[in-house]
Amino acid sequence: MRPTAIAAALIAATVLTGCASWFEGSSANPPTPLAKLEAGQKLSIAWSEKAGDVEGGGFMPYYQGGNVLAASQDGAFHEWEASSGQRVREWNVKRGFSGGLSANEDTVFVGSANGELLALERVSGKERWHAPLTSVAPEAPLVAGDVVIARTNDGRITGFDVKDGRQLWSSARTLPQLLLRNTGSMQLVGNEALLVGQAAGRVAVLRPATGDVLWESALAAPRGATEIERITDVVTRPVFDNGQVCAVAYQGRVGCLDARSGSLQWARELSSTRGLTLDERNLYVTADDGSVQAYDRSTGRNLWLQTGLKYRDVSGPARLGRYILVADGEGYLHLLSSDDGRLAGRIKGDFVSAVELITLPDGVLLLSRNGRVARITLG
Image (cartoon, rainbow, N blue to C red; front, side, top):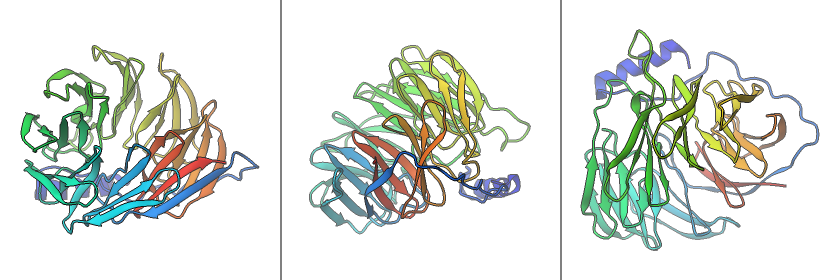
């Protein structure tokens, strides 16, 4: 994105709303042409279905009990079998949703466009309860046992009783004047911990039942002479595995922290609003220029750098077998070897760019900007 375009958007957003939003814009660099691939690992699109309009929000699909659930801006709900793509149910409540959903066995939780948290019957969409929020919630609420947690545009995180919508706790923080649009930077670790990416390069862990802050640490520090240069937000989900919490910040760093204490184990300079994933040994991340990199989780040593997809509007990575999967802005899916980053496979999909990739027990779930949900498999 060109600096002048960023500046114009941020200034306009400040005048109108008091905070800045990250928006899609054209790159000053042309997309890197795709290299010809010899016969490689085959990729398949097991199924692909239309979910509806998902522009401008964090409409991440939700996987539960072998099914995939999705919401769209116009109030539509869809549920499919993850293995086959067969439709289980659909309904439309005819009221706008502000972001993605989560669910338990019988209830769907989603934010409304007018600043409420809705609890809807999973079978019919009939309202069970609604609770007022302090602002619109652009990302999916999360369910941790008896608590459903919502995060709103004003930076407040609030826990509600799943049965009746009664507010249980609320946690607020002061936001910088300028910040990136945040549509998905919370992650649950079971019912025991809530990982939160925050503005100014910070990561926090909260107790879901009470909202108590277990720790908060700096992954990256704001730098620069102007407010735009000093935007250093963690706007993708921190990831937990084997005693580590790993995250990445825009105009900041990628790194890992000790899950118990929050102490920084290592960090490397990198800017990303695309996100990361982990396996047993390594961390994989897509930088904002579209390059994909791997780091040793223990030491932070850079293991490989794949530049063949630069400036192609590349998604965050997801694990698929022993490979890493990413999607680009032209609808191509790319397989990378987790060992050395080489391009190992490619397929063209029926979608326009991916906004979310989620690893499933058997494949990867994809949400595209044109509202398609698909399951990707090997072979």
